[in-house]
Length: 261
Length: 309
Image (cartoon, rainbow over all chains, first blue to last red; front, top):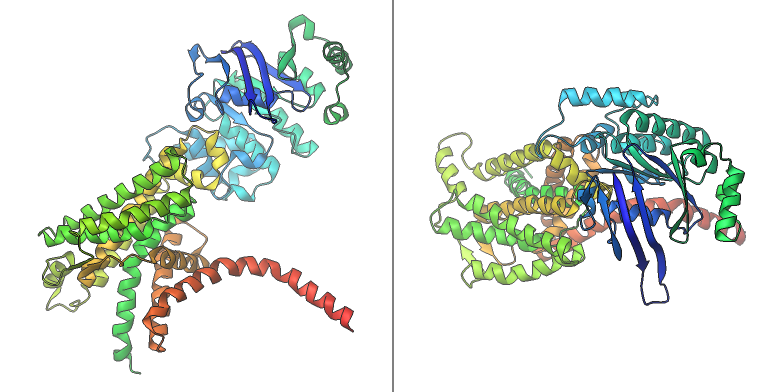
C-alpha cells in the first residue's frame, strides 16, 4: 500500500541550524495495516508524515503509494489518496463556513460548478449522527462555534468521507480533554475498522499505541528503532516498551508526556 | 431645501454608489472571501474604463462590456500568477500590477490620458433612447447599474455555494486546511482573482460610459473607497447568507456616496473627499480594535486616578 525506500531529509543543510530529521527510513505497509508510532519529541514522527503527505521533497529515496511512485507529486494531488489529521483541532476545518459546507468540500465529487444535492445533505446528516454529538442538528452553523473535540471529530469525518487509501493521524487527540479524547479515539477505531483503512497514527500514549492497531513503530533521531508486529507485539506491556527503548537508544525515554499518560 | 432640489443629488449618489458597488462586490470576493487585499484594483478599474471606452468609441456599445470584463480577468490573472507562482507577496503583486497598468491604460487609450465619449453610442444612450417618453426617462444610469449589481449578486450567491466557490472560501478562511487537502490553492486563488477583477473592470466600464469620458485617474483611490464601502456594508449586514452580505456591499457603497454628497453640500471642497474615504477606512478598521482596548484604558485611568487622591 505504502512503501518508503531510503528516505532522508536534512533541514537547513550547511548552516548552524542544520537538522537531520529523517535518516534512511524505509517502511512498507500492507493494505489494512493500522500502525501506531511512538517516539520522543524531535524523533522525526511528524516529519515522516510530512514526507508521506508531500509537504516537502525528501533529499533521497522514493515514496510509492498503492503501487504508484508519488515522490514528485505535489501535496494537493496526494491529498486525494491521503486523509490527514493534526494535533490542532482548528487546522482541519474552515471556521466561517458551516458544517454542511465543510462536509461538502470534503466529499468532493460532482463538477466544480455543482451544488450540494439534497441526497448528499441527507448522507451528511446520517454520518454526523454517528458521532453522537448532536452535530446533525447544527449543520447550518459555522464550524467556528464548535468545541475542539467536536471540530476534531468533524475533521475525522471529513478526512474519511471519501475513504482515503491512507489515513495519517498526528496525535489527533492530544489537545483534547481526556473524555473527548477517548471518544474521538473510539470513533477513529470504528471508522478505520469499518472502512478497512490503512492507517498510521502518532500517539504519545504508549498503552493505546499497543492496544490499537496491528503494528507499532518506535522512532528516535530520525530512524525507525523498533518495528513490532505479530507474535512479538502480542502481550507486550508499556514497561517492556520502555526497556526496549533503553536497550536500543542507550538512554531512558525522557518524554514526560509519554511517561505520565 | 425642498425635496425636488435634493433628489437630483440623491440620484447622482445612487448612480455612483451602485456603479461602484460592483468594485465593492469584487473586493467582497477577493478581500472577504479569498483574504487577498488586491491593490491592483485602481489600475484594473481604469483598465476596464479604458477598454470599454475604446470599444464603445469604435462602434460596439454592447461589446464594450464583455471586453472590459475580459480585460479585468487578464489583469486579475497576472496578479494571481505573480503571487501564486512567482513567490511575490500578495500586496506587492497588486502594487506592481497597478503600476504596470498605468502605462497599459494610456496605451489602450491611444497614448492619451483622456477619452471623450460625448458623441459615442453606449449602453446608456441606447437605453436612454428606449426610455424616452416613459416615466423612467433619465433613469438609464441607475437602471443599468442596478441590473448589473443584481446580476453580480445573483452570480456570487450561486457561485460561492458551488464546490469551486466553497473551495475558494476555504482557501481564504483556513489556508492550513487547504494546504493539506486536495484543493489546489493556486487554482482557487487564480479563479477568485480573475472573477473579482472582471467585476472591477465592469465597474470601471460602466462608470466611464455613464460619465461619457475616461480619465487616466478615474480609478485612483478606488480601492480605498471600495474598502470603506465594504466595511460600512459589513457593519450593517455582516452576518447571514452570502446574498444578504452581498446586498450589504451595495448598501455600503450607496451610504458612502450619500455621506460624500452631504459632505459636498456642507461646502467641503471636492479635493478633500479622498481624505474622507481614508478616514472612513481607518475608523471602520481601527474602531473595533480600539474598542477591545477600551477596558484596559479605563482601568489604567481609574488606577492612576486612585493614586492621585
